[in-house]
Length: 128
Image (cartoon, rainbow, N blue to C red; front, side, top):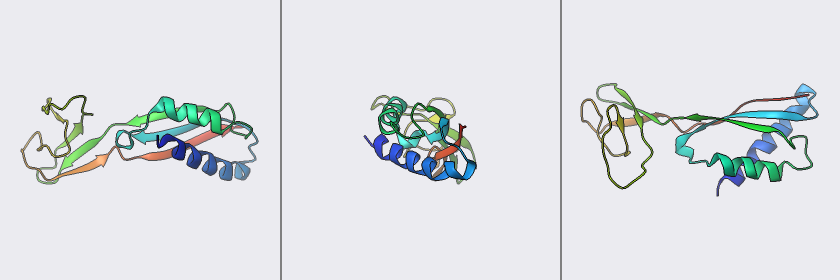
């Protein structure tokens, strides 16, 4: 459960930043988290609720923007989505592929790069 270490980092970063803005109580924290990070939002929120107790972050809402995993073929430049694998069956679904080692859905080459889905960012926080 790597969500706990993520929560620790979020709390440390926000606690270090709030004095710069004269904030004494944080009401919300907005995050961008890529699918490749495999973060379970419920586990992250639960861990935050526990670890933020007795801090200026206690009770803050965690807002998570999930970033889909997209790739680009280095051969033809085509961009497509990776689908999270829900089974061991590999299939192509339109402009999507569901395995990192699959071929480009357009040109069938294997020279693929990930262009989104690795994000782990604090977008902003609000408070008073």
